[in-house]
Image (cartoon, rainbow, N blue to C red; front, top):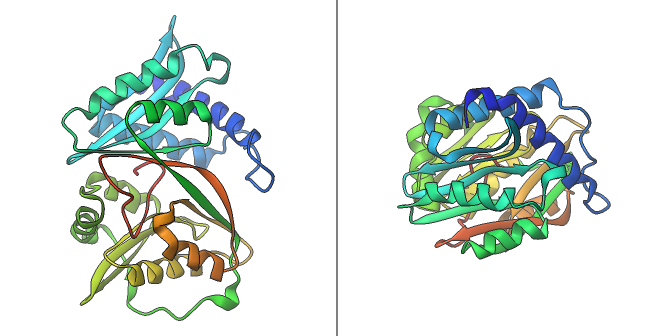
Length: 287
């Protein structure tokens, strides 16, 4: 993948997401309309981030000069993750997806562990299982926070770039590898909440809707504090989402239910040579 491929890769990603969401069950998010400037800018910035730090993990499928598929993978210490994997809808089922996955899996050589977040698409789930990943069904919690349920939370503060060492330390304890440079990207695009006490540490990146983008903590009580603090940031009437929860994250499911959110099945957290990290809510892009 090259910088000149970003615009075409972004367009086919949006087109593929439209198809995925159109096939979701009632209550799911509606298919997206035309890409917003904010979505397009964030996608392009992420692509440039991966091209800078993981150029060998970024691939496109090219058919006579036309980009028809994209896959971007990262390596952080000894952990490999698949950040993006899309084929243009009119070219799906033609072998492009398998070729792209083989290419990015080559970037995992030497890594002890692997992580992928999958949609419920049975073709994707099949590919990941055949590649040696264990499929853990996931839950999405979504809805408007019942603000009368918000507890008073202490010990949580605003974070910033100076907290990267703390975040990396928590990452290594919970998932066996730090996010490293990804924390810098997230600090530029999200709010950061940090909890650092005598009993443990944790952090949570939060978007403008109050939805957690990435959360990790060394114990469940701290994780629940951070999640409640994130939900408290949601604008009144705004819909929040807590994505990619496995059965190992019941602490987060309990918070979601207490806050009045709804639950539904979503897809899979696919893991190789590792158990679901906990307490942890992965990032869709940075895993």
